Image (cartoon, rainbow over all chains, first blue to last red; front, side, top):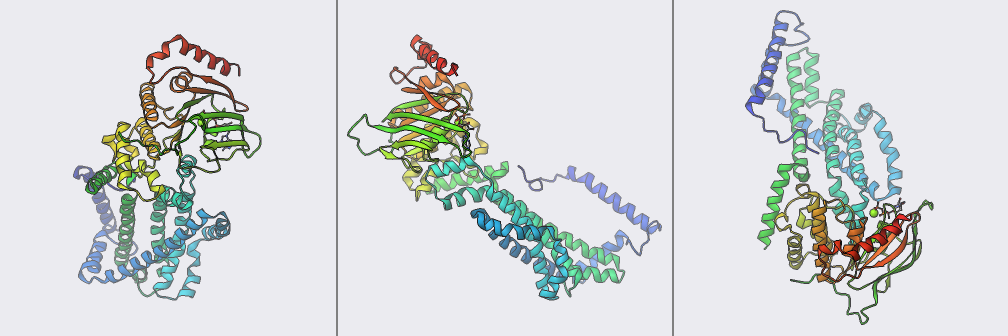
Amino acid sequence: MKTPFAGHALSLTRLLPHLALFGTLILAWEIAVRTGLIQSIMVPKPSTIFAAIVELYFVKGTIWYHFFVTLTEAVAGFIIGAAIAIALAVGSSLSDAFRRYVSPYAVVLNVTPGIALTPVIIAWFGFGMGSKIALAAVISFFPIFVNTLTGLTQTDTDREELFRSIGASRVQIFTRLRVPAALPLLFAGLKIGLTTALIGAVVAEFAQATEGVGVLMSRFSFQLNMGASIASLLSMTLIGLILFYSMEFLDDRMVFWRREERREAVSRKRARAWKRRG
Amino acid sequence: MQRHAVRSKASPDQNAPVVSGSGVGKTFASGTVIALEDAGFSVPKGRFNSLVGPSGCGKSTLLRLISGLIEPTSGSLQVHGEEVTKPRQDVAMMFQRATLLEWRTAIENVLLPSEIGGRVTSEDRTRAMELLKLVGLGDFAFSFPAQLSGGMQQRVALARLLQTGADVLLLDEPFGALDEFTRERLNVELLRIVTEIEATTIFVTHNIAEAIFLADEVYVMTPRPGRIAKIIDVPFDRPRELSIQTSPEFNHLVEEARDILGAH
Ligand SMILES: Nc1ncnc2c1ncn2[C@@H]1O[C@H](COP(=O)(O)OP(=O)(O)OP(=O)(O)O)[C@@H](O)[C@H]1O
Ligand SMILES: [Mg+2]
């Protein structure tokens, strides 16, 4: 199993065709709007968006405050959702009774569209960051819970018998076999959860808020300032990318045995550590 | 060369069996599969016995019973004179699959039994490295399982088995998935090691010639229900040359085992 997004050295020759395609699309779009093929009220010209980006990000810098508000909401919500999900998954994997009590709620929570809880959550937690964090936590919970639980309850009878045959306790089997074996799936869950948390934060901002990129974006849209609106949208993309690649990086570090280069690096490191201990 | 086995307390009677069973039976939960029926046997100290028989005749089941991983439905099993109720420190098992942990280097895999038993001492570490050299993997101590071939992984598992320091070794088709050359070499190596540490060994295989070549006694097993159909005594002295396999006595023993298996 390889991590599909990490560790590709992008050479210029591979990058060039992509840049050419991107440039062509942007140019075609610009021409289409300028010649009136597309209405410029609804769809701004790329040059307009570019001007808005320069203003929002560099000249005035208004975006950054909202950027960090949304980033904080998403990350905080994710951490809370992940903590609860992992705790419940660990409990469920250790006790069948516990799982029987937890899983109906988890399933109900999953089939209920999490986004639909927005009005309720805003009523409970107010207009501030609290409600955004809560919604992010609620909708990031399930993917993390399911993946972690699946990882922890994978059965490898042979390895488990190996551990029992050398006298391992239940705790040792859990920490030395089940947890490491579950890490790849845990991280798969965390990656989905993190992206979902961002959706939660932004949706709650659209619904009711005073700060955050979602607020900024809907405000610009109401003013029919589409260039600035899309420029704000791009900052959500930026948040998404930052979050995704941070988790991807962490995954690559923790599940080091999956990728050839990482395996070799860790293998060299352990050899050095062994020699130092003498 | 350092000796690895945990010595059983100096036994006054050399012929007292280290592993023995009588009337051992195992029926699995469903109640329909009689995996093993009425198995009686007794293995004295330092002996090498093999179990041979077709797939599904209860070989793995018998080993798992002796190792204390599962409980017999009937009969009784003793190791060093004590009834087996759970896995014991002085009994170690090597499984059909290498069962290495892919997030641990070879040496860390070998050290697993020491780690489970308590704190890893520097003697444990020295011994683990010696064992890896013994199985010919001194240069691969820090490789991860994914960087090793199937045969190398099995050798790591063999080193891990020896690291337990157990004096009763149970091997379930340990080299079954390997090519003939590697298997023969590892078998000879295994024989040398267990002779040196005076371990009592039970070795499962479905290869008749291999079973006879390695063992002092061969238990021939037949399926449905799993039974020990016959115990064949192998009279050759140790150490054995590969060439005995072409001798008439050897072929006579092979015929004998084949007749029993063929009758089923
Ligand atoms: N956990 C189990 N539950 C139910 N039936 C089992 C279980 N383990 C083994 N059996 C049954 O017991 C019988 C003996 O199985 P066992 O694994 O001991 O065979 P074996 O001689 O080791 O075969 P092989 O050479 O294929 O490894 C088989 O019929 C098998 O289906
Ligand atoms: Mg078997």
